[in-house]
Length: 337
Image (cartoon, rainbow, N blue to C red; front, side):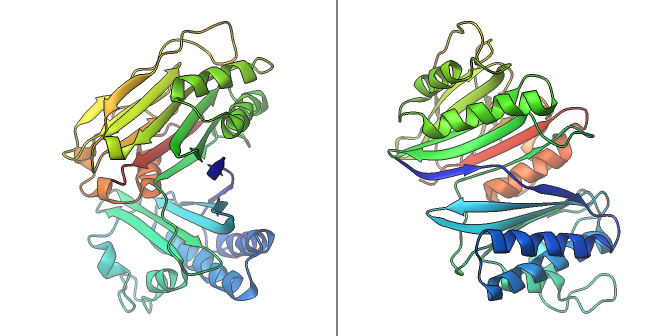
């Protein structure tokens, strides 16, 4: 039933010195072997990991890199997301060309990344920093998805109570964001139960799916969560939420439309569940995030970001609006009509 199911997993690296490059490269090679990339693609992956890390060391402030597996349509690959708050680049396209350098080096780093990658996207804003997202797959086909997301644990924690999942169930394109109550392993267990129930839920509208998640989570401490279903061909988005998951539709001109979630905790008592419908036309973006992300971001502060991939948009908002004193998750989905 689920032709396309993706959940978040991975390792965050803080990249502050050149010594981080070897650790990231080795971890990438191990992950490439685990997802059964062939030797040539693992070698390409190692180059990507080394160049991304090198760029963070040379140019970035507060540079971090996420390494994780990605699976889609029966194939597995590796995804790397590099995020920094450095000086940024005036023109990312120019900076990606071989020979362009701002530090006196050969200037082949970004060009090498683009050549080895199956898919590459990025966003950079002068004075604000850069986000680069790369995927390496067994074949060279591009793998951009209609949805992308990241989670980050509370500083000092090794697991996050926030999580997300994406699925296509009998033609229904649906996404979930969950925020387990509290922090640490018990919050993570609640969200993992929500993700598992979402993957296995019968195909149905968001309100029915939220009801299924609620019934499946009674053994956990519970979670705030929301489910959205995108129907771009009809120009509509269906949404049902419990608790303080924020949902926003960003329209073509950057206008924001807030989505309604009802009070309640999935897995506890008997909450009221109601589904709401919203216009969702061409060029629209859905942004969902936990309360570990402040809701004061404005698209007018990020010229051109809405045209980037959902993953790059999510990573940029997580960098600038995520708070370190809480788990954080941002999911972005786009219309493809």
